[in-house]
Image (cartoon, rainbow, N blue to C red; front, top):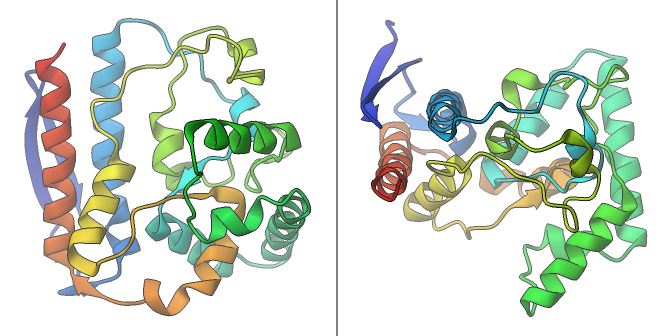
Length: 251
């Protein structure tokens, strides 16, 4: 079956996305490839409009070594399936890394709240949780020994959208140092969660990537459910493009 072509215009630039046809009924994670393609193009437009060079480069891994890296439930399930499909010994190596990170978060008293999607009682509590997470310095389980991303093509939305323009050294302490990033035109994570909530009733929240496999395993039955693939995609795209047009109107 031929690919479908979606076309938009953002800041006067055409956005063309070739997507594989979706099955009539699809899991939420099956829509991710199309949304990633849209995300990449929106970020390229945002970078061009911002006019400042992006500091991020291969081997620059400060954010990969300390950040929570929030992923959506659909992304968490996509990562679980990706790891399950890895050949040995890679699968065992990655699973071991995830288990070690989860154990450290559990010891720090952070794992349960994140896994259950509980919101912090206040902004101060939320910031304290983030600081506690950063202090653990939990490297992404997919970070390779050469500081490259082991899942670059399938990396989460937040990784695609976190384009730093300030000195990379500042990323070692993002809470206290003035890290500057390219303003997003739209958050595809937010758009996809909004669409998921509309079609499935899922709660809107994210999970740190280090707990993605634990979360997806616990919620596997729910994440295996299927919905109209076209409806999920259309709702996600509409939400993302609506946010993008709101952003461009304020530029």
